[in-house]
Length: 216
Image (cartoon, rainbow, N blue to C red; front, side, top):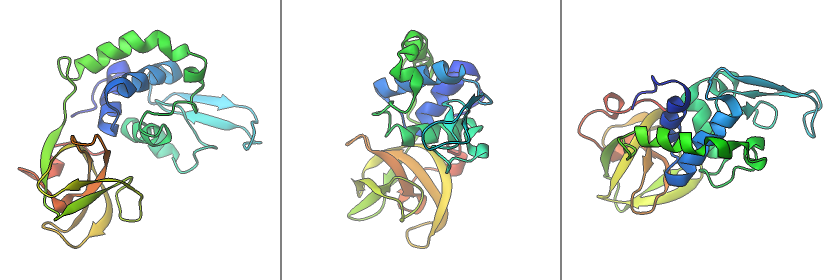
């Protein structure tokens, strides 16, 4: 799935690739419109606040704050997909929007209709699922919150299950499996709805996943 769109359609694409689904996906797009007008270069300056005595900057599509979220560097914050991934993690997969002032004050609500239309445009009314893969780890494979075994476990998926792959990234090198590499796939387990990362070496796809989906 490309990210060549602009404005609200860009937000819809990268939010979907980050893992947002259903109502949280629509909310995510609406929040981004309220925060930045879906401009990946947007920046807002804040004066001193609690914990940030020197002021701070809100950056990119979802205006990720550089003081409260210092692990999100500027390169990530001003890159559309990386910003969306950060928003997904900060919002706990779209279940907690309290960190965003435009959600708390209701400003995002005026963009909900436009956000719904943008989500519908992702796939003629049904957002695409990227590509599918089959789990080869027996009896099951842990789904991690990041691309490595040091990240937390978000859930698991059983051997032989079919999962949806939204994008790929690079992380910890995994020497086991069928195709040892540092490639990790961002997947959704349709059976449980759990989204996260799994080592690509344990996922069977028709072709090299890097030729089938974009980078996260």
